[in-house]
Length: 274
Image (cartoon, rainbow, N blue to C red; front, side, top):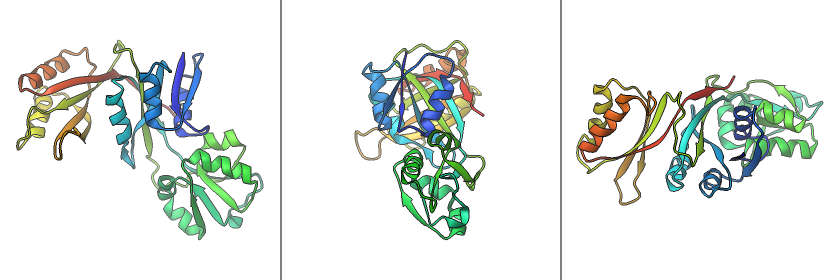
């Protein structure tokens, strides 16, 4: 079985993929971008793909949502990975000797107060993993990276300071996708795409009222442009029942009666990693 994920080595995506598929024999297919991950599955180069779709601090990752539609994939799983950031250096690095901190801009922003207290410069990389790898290659004790414990272990770095993020509730949600549009028997969530029949005042409210009337909890709501004309939007909704639940079937039927286009993007159960 081949699984596509976002590289390079040491990313949170790699950690999520390896932990989710840990008990299986996997042929890993590392990609350079999220769209490439989903394209690999859509084109049959990989059987499964795993891609980040939402971060507790940064919000929805729109390129994942858009690429799901382009490649006509099915969400069959969800992985929730806690995000902890550490200051990583080569062995022997001391906090007081650090003059520059390297990482991806969002990670640096999530540790802003701590980095400010160090009174050091920052340098941007394209991923936390790339920053950690660069620290290992540099072999210096006056620079450090903001990255995960997973990356630190992979590149032989030490934790100069642990848990330097400002929010200890940070998590990233990943979707596990496939071409096989078959929901797991234990699915407890369903992702839907709703394209309104027309643009009118209260259209979103009328859509949400269908779920409210059926007592279906919505755990995620996102709007994206239809890309047909300015101001035309489609909605992505995550419902708290599996697709086999009669209430989901009824909600879809009611929305279609109103003339809306409804597509089931997946049905799955969340896996929370420690």
